[in-house]
Image (cartoon, rainbow, N blue to C red; front, top):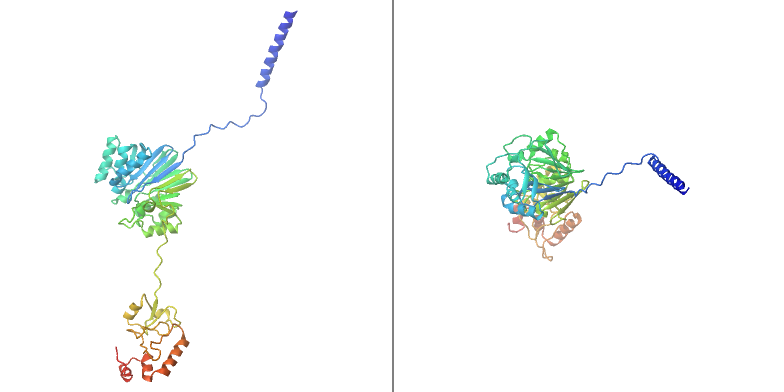
Length: 425
């Protein structure tokens, strides 16, 4: 009996387990939302160093562990570039871009190649007669590399950023107009690097219809007036710009023409000559800048104030000279302007006694007022004060002889002076 009870108990227990398992396998309702994918590793962002290499160009781009060096300054900057890469532990350059063959862009790349291994080296030409270019080719060859000439429209990635080659579109006898122009896009932020691209190449790129809109413009040719034409700048519409140039350089870079265009476009400007190396950081949405020095420097002051208006106005018909505040100014068509009294007097103009003070004792063109006793000094007529002038005349009449009055009122004929017994000067 006990045996049968045990068997029944075991059977019921097993049946309950099977039934419970079956019920648990049934769907309890509509499926829920899919599980979210695993969180990706946070992107460290994009950093662009506009390296202060004086009157030259160099920029290092770092994104998600990959690097690109755009130009390397002059040959004398080789040590600087070597140290810059070493201090940031950049022992591998995924890309080197030599924008064109001029030494102030390609010279320091020898220093980069002496420290870091390069994967790809872009340049618009494969040969150029200069020691700096020869060294660039030599150090590439030591790494088993050679120059790659890119084509407009070529694209490649740098970490999580994308790079597009926009120029040059054709050969040119002017190396500046063979500059590699490239656009780097990272999320909603983009940088346009223009080398020494001048107006001719800018026009080619505009005609090709590339999307030039960029958040940051590396201004072409160190801010020279030969670059950054109005049509080119309008297509870019940058919020920020960086000019790489040397302090007090002999070229006068950046030129006022370029600075004026950037002011007109309301572009915030950074300059290596004033602020040293400029570091830009972007999270793909915004971009911030950190200058090496002088963060608050006025990098694009307004143009010098125009020269002050002429301080003397002459009547071309009467040759009478007035102050600008005079109430008896000649009509505009009869005016001539002088920057100084001496200039006007040298041109043969006489002071208008109602608005210009007369010199004590006389001058070359002013009427001479005698020192009438008891005043002991010349009478003066202040500008625009007609009543004061009349008082002076009345005073002269009461205290001086008629002959003196005659001379004082401007009758300078020799006969009158003889009658007044006043020696002529």
